[in-house]
Image (cartoon, rainbow, N blue to C red; front, side):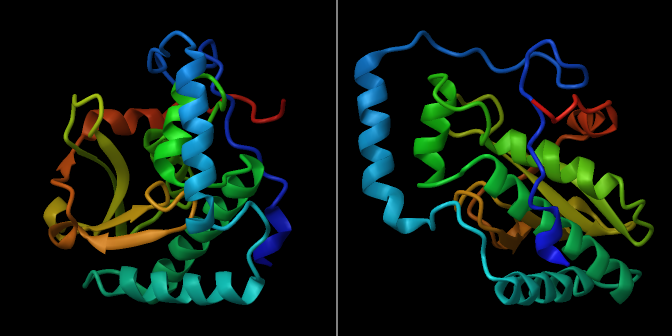
Length: 216
């Protein structure tokens, strides 16, 4: 059942934790920026549901739609594997959304994390988490890639998982992105998205690293 794993906790972002590499540098805390963050979160909170469990029926419907999109990536993708990957994605995102108490939009959460008010919720956190989850599925007809847009830009860089049919090009892939709607899934073909995605295979080593113990 989809709701049986809602006791999941996102990985600790302890800089000393194995497998994560150096975390992004956090700027010094500035009270006036914190006020802006809280104000922004309050003004955008109505755009994204609070961190309450989504109905099982909604999750099941979302899983079915995502499975169709993954199967639609073309041969050699099997319907069974597309369904298994979709289930892993939907469950992982819902568990992380609940465990991290996500609410409000993506930008206020980014500001809060960078100011030290929250530990988790940046786009690369989601990419790392989803990539690890999908790697554990040992997919045979689908391939999982790390995508990055605007690499190196402090304000514009964005990361997401991109899934392709095995043997197809990155440009033929499907972007799977829970960050942009604050913990709600978005998926879209690479060529149809507004982000100029590029493959970053070196970042995928993070998926093969041993994850820190998620229990606090």
